[in-house]
Length: 319
Image (spheres, rainbow, N blue to C red):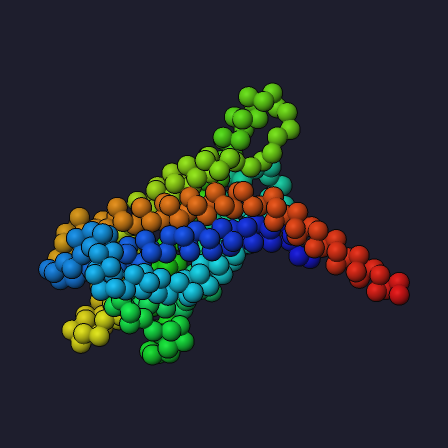
């Protein structure tokens, strides 16, 4: 079948966009994660909002610790987005070729996005778990990637895999909504231009806006599961023996859901939603905006590289 250059271009653009957006917003991500991990505590609340986390970092002279785990997060993010965009683009093209359809429907799009997300979750779960533990550790006390992964059993590295697979519905919803809104917007622009040929790319502002809308919808619908995942992965970053016992009791998704219901009620499932939306919407909007703007350049670069390799191979054969 050969290498799918279009899928490779999509994957590369998505991975680069993810890398840049993750780095830009990482301090906010650290504050958000520590805040979410704190609101799950039984009766006690160390942080009232995101600014309390930032205030602690400043008062303890650990501002740079807001970047603890950045390397691991970037590695996880780059691999995850590359695998996701490659899988999503590849499965999408394969579906269109096999079905003979001109356009992909919403239901098929959801299935394809979920399949790509499942592959991504399995491939990057150890890095995801490690980055969460590093972020939620005390400022200045974060361990390295290898030590974080090897301090427990191998199965511990896959903590939260089940809920990560469940959360494949998040990017599935996000990218489905984004694709549908994008197609409608481009179609309207094409109609306004009198069906003349135009570039199939959005402006930076349009991509940012559509990315924010699609991620807001996906985040709201899946937030209870997102909060459960943070609780499961962050809980063993504490050195308190009581916390460790709590982790053993509530490591499963049903256990965490029951603990939230018992101590906080229905509202507890949405604690920290504002912080999650602030971070994920900005991150996803930036990712999609950057991806849209560099996708054409990436495609040209890949074609130029392919042409160079073919010419080089031809010269070697003729020599």
